[in-house]
Image (tube, rainbow, N blue to C red; front, side, top):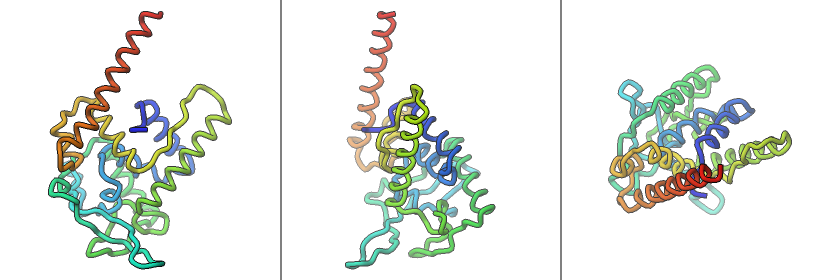
Length: 226
C-alpha cells in the first residue's frame, strides 16, 4: 500500500480519531498528513522551529530513539541525511490549525515537554508522559487506531471501506500524494519533501499520475455501463 488511497478514506480516518478515545493524537496526525514531514522530523520539531506568523516550519534536525548499548536506548538529535533535508516547509491552513490546537492542548493539559535533548527542548508533540514522541510509539498508536476502526465498522456494518495497515512513513507518502493530486509541481514537491534527488520525487509523482489516469478511465467505463 503506497498511501491512504482516497481523500474520503483519509477524512474517515481523521474523523474517527477526532471523535474517539484517540482524540489526543488528532493534531499530530493532521499535521503529518498536511506537511509530508519525515516522522523523525515531526518528533524533533520544537516550538522555536515554528513560525505561525509567516506560515512555515524550519526543519534542521530529527529526533530518533536508538540503541546505545545491549539493553539501553536513548533520545538522539540527528542532522538531515543531505543538505536538501534542511528546509522551510509551508503550512496549509489545516496544518496551522493543528499546531494551534496542539499548543492549546499543551497549555490546558499541562503537557509541555520539560526534557532537553542535545540542546533542544520545548517539543511540539509530546506523549501523555510529557516526553517527545518517537517513531516506534507513533507506529503502535496507528496500529491500535486501525484495528479499532476496522473492528467498529465491521461491528456496525455499512459500506465504509476498511483502513489499510498504516505506518508513519505511509502518512508522508499520503501527504505527497494529496499534494500531487492538487497539482503541486514535482520541483516544489522535491523541496517540500526534502529529497536529495528529483528521481525520488518523480517515483512518487508518477505513481500518483498513473493512479489518477486509471481512476479517470474507470470513470469513463462507469459512464458507458450506465
